[in-house]
Image (tube, rainbow, N blue to C red; front, side, top):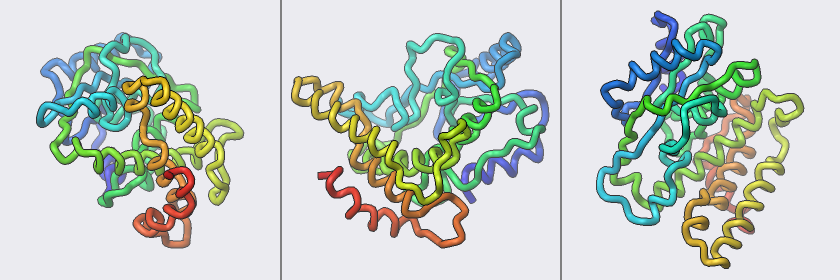
Length: 265
């Protein structure tokens, strides 16, 4: 069915003035809803609210895994981030709330992005919506004391899973670039993702510099640029969501390898 499709289906039963979302692998603290409610009441000029997401490891993590938190790999936030205004990118699926007036104004989640039952979906299901809201002048607030713990299962603590996550993140970045609501930033559906690939290239250089300078933490903390590049090119080959031409993401993943060989090697 897909995560965003399920969310939109649930909006028909919407009541109250605040919609609170979490994931099925998140464990909220007992006062979680109270903290979100308090923040929404105190800061009525804000429409989006995100809270702290901490890892709940299924087993003690290996050292290399700790370099990936906080960050998008496990949707973990920085515990030291203070309460206050934040970019909408800090409003993440495991711990978020939106004012219901948003949906009464006919906003909906984009059903063509996010978890869809496949293993290589394009990430960014809630980010696409919060970007649109930001473009309309709506603001986000970080509720530091609204805390959930994100369960990280054993199979998610492997290098293979983390690299697969980077691939999905890359696909998501291309999809989000296609729909970027900022003036002059929306991409033509078949335009090569030059800007995004250039950004990844710069990160590759920074990664190499960190390794040469003997900074293992800096090097390990960087998301995997080659795998993200594969995701970007895979998304490009599929084109914009909703294209009339059918695109199997598994085929895109295989066919993107040749285009990203120089980046990956």
